[in-house]
Structure formats: C-alpha cells, structure tokens
Image 1 (tube, protein in one colour):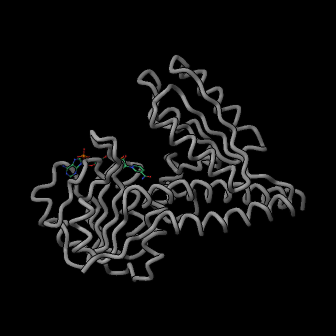
Image 2 (cartoon, helix red, strand yellow):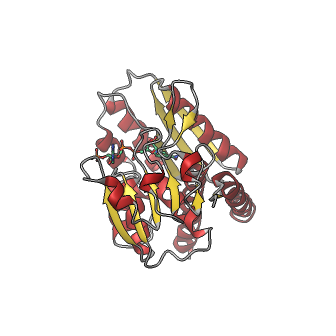
Amino acid sequence: MSAVIISGKELATEKRAFIKAEVQKLVKDQQIQPSLAVILVGDNPASHSYVRAKQKACEEAGMECILDHYPSTLTEKELLDRIAHYNHEGSVHGILVQLPLPDHINELAVIESISPNKDVDGFHPVNIGKMMIDQETFLPCTPYGIVEMIKSLNVSISGKHVVVIGRSNIVGKPVGQLLLKEDATVTYCHSRTKDLASITKQADILIAAVGRANLIGPEFVKDGAIVIDVGVNRLDSGKLCGDVDFDKVKEKASFITPVPGGVGPMTITMLLQNTLQSAQKSESENKTFSC
Ligand code: NAP
C-alpha cells in the first residue's frame, strides 16, 4: 500500500483564497486592512527566506506587511522599543519577530514584550496559557496548521493514539496539546526516550518534529499510520528533507506529508489566519466602543 500524500500546498492555497476573501470584506465594509509588522535582526539566510515567504503571502492575501530589518548589532533595548511602538500602533494587528535572535538578545524577554493581543505567532506565555485551558487565543502557527491538515483528511482524531517526537515550545508541546483537545491520547517522545521505535510503532498518528534528516524509517511506523513530518533539514547536496524517510515510510503509512510542500505552507497560512483574526477582533472592539 502506498500512502496518500497530504499536500500542505494545496490545502494552503484553498485556505489562503478564503482568507483573501475575508480581507477584501474587511477592507470594503470596515476600511480595515490587516497589517503585520515583521522584525528581522541580522542576516541568517534561512530567516531571510522565511521572512520573504511571509511577506509574499501577506501581499497575496491583500494584507499589509511592514518589514523592519536591522543589523545584528541592534541592542535588546532598541528592539524592545520598536516592539513597544508597534504594540501601540492601532493600524498594526500582528507583530512577528523572526527567530532565532542574535545571542546578546534575550528571546523570552522579546516574546514577552509583544502585546498578547498582537502575538500572531502564538508564542507569548499568556497565549500559551490560554491555549492550555482551551480559551480563544492565537494558536502557534505550525501546530495549528498540523491540526488543520489532519482534520482535512476526514478521519476521526478522537481516541487515536498520537505520538509526538519532539517537545519544543513552538512545535512538539503545543501540537500534542491541541490534539489532546481533539480527544486524542497523546504520548511525547524526546532525545532521552528509551526504545523510541517501540513507542512510535503504537501511533495511529505519528508527528516527527525533531530536526534530524531521515531519522524515522519504516521500522518506527505502524501499518496504516498517519505520518506528519515537521522537520526541515538541508542535506549536503543542498536538497531539503524531513525527519521521515519519505520513500520508505510512504509504503507503510496511510497518509503522509512531504517535505517540502507539507507542513511549511500551512504554517504561513495560519500566520495569515491569526493576523486576519486580530484585525477582525479590532473591528468588533471598535464597534463595541462606539455603541
Ligand atoms: P527543537 O527545538 O530543536 O526540538 C527538537 C526536539 O527533538 C527536542 O525536543 C529534542 O529532544 C528532540 N530530539 C532530538 N533528537 C532526538 C532523537 N534522536 N530522538 C527523539 N527525539 C529527539 O526543534 P523545533 O523547533 O521543535 O523544530 C523541529 C523541526 O521542525 C526542525 O527541523 C525545524 O526546522 C522544523 N520546523 C518546521 C516548521 C515548518 O513550518 N515546517 C516550523 C517549525 C519547525 P530534547 O527536548 O530532549 O532535546
């Protein structure tokens, strides 16, 4: 059996068309153009390429994208001042600071300085806390996109055993939490997990968020499992690949995401969704205020 390939690219295209229509409605009816401020510090080539992709996606969706690019010598104070400016700028609905930051800047202090109301990456501790207790908030984009991909398959998540490999704050931990909310039974694995394959082979839904090229071969996968590959790894040849040995695992799984073209496009789509949500919220708050 060869797995059905889950095209994040196709799903993202569908969702972005919907988001674009909602943006047009907001502009036409309320004269509000969703606006995202993106702050990039330094010259990390991967960060540049992620920022370019986000900027392009915003423009295609009819959103404004303000890009502030600073040299790596920017001080933490200067960065915090810039964030404070956007926190108070009513026409800006989302603020994103591209990570990683240079070593002299405290990443957590920066994340905490973004207003939770504009934290469209969903990394602020307040928003993570709200997610944990199922309150409406900005969900972190990669986990949010993964859940949307699984839901698009029209298979029930309830009661399924989800195994997440990876426990980072931006992918592993939140994706498990969001799937717990969908009534899955969730197991987390990480670098200290003993006999990884014995656990991953129990997964109905296996999510690999590690960052090790081709770590997950068919011996880690149960027949018919849904396999979501979050990893993005660059081989010496320059080719991108995931954490999952795609060619071999696709012969065992029922559904599988490719890399590239899987989780990546959905991550940016959920960033657009969060920015739209923030702009819509600002519109309804203005209405409440004027009543
Ligand atoms: P991270 O912070 O480095 O976390 C990696 C996790 O993998 C850690 O929890 C680590 O365990 C675990 N791990 C490492 N080696 C392992 C092993 N041999 N066996 C089992 N677990 C192991 O990475 P991240 O930020 O979550 O990102 C993970 C991957 O996803 C990266 O390739 C990243 O580029 C990619 N990513 C893709 C997107 C997208 O949109 N496509 C978005 C975000 C990230 P410990 O906690 O014990 O160290």
